[in-house]
Length: 270
Image (cartoon, rainbow, N blue to C red):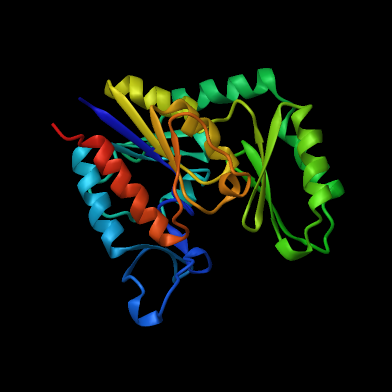
């Protein structure tokens, strides 16, 4: 049986220093492995135990990193284990095959967005017009597919996010708040669609998934089994669904537990 594992990365398998959520005495903290360096500084980590589990998973299943990151941001990450044959970037907008962009897949995605959603230029203009510079630090566009803001979370008005979500909904877009970033993403731009395409190409009999944010909900729903950690946007909303397990673990140890669950599901007893 071929098992496909599509997992979100940030705050699901890998964690920044601020997201580690280490508990207990410092002397008992897990050993960490740095898997991303940015501007010559360490940026993202997983535990050494998680690194071992991920290596085992790469031998037991088709492991597909599945991220909202751009291709450039994804390529900064150096995960342990076999190099993934497939990776999903830009929330499904790009499919990498042996590290190279599948241009046919990208063309099919952009054609659907053009047909079903308000243009990116309209969303960008709305964000620039309504986001207060008092709490907005950066305006960004990712791969000419979606937009996001980097904000000061403690200054961000909750009502503004709700109003943006309503505005976006009426234009075929969705809004997700993840840490210090607010994403505006076209609804048809999904991780699940790309996961289904990889499952088709690999002949996968079973799909497993994990994620922590609203942008991962469609991925979890599309998989045969899914897991979410005890932190993040989905946990804050107490979101769950049939076939999705809500784990209690938070922070980097949640990444460890998710990998254990993947391995158990990929290697059922008997």
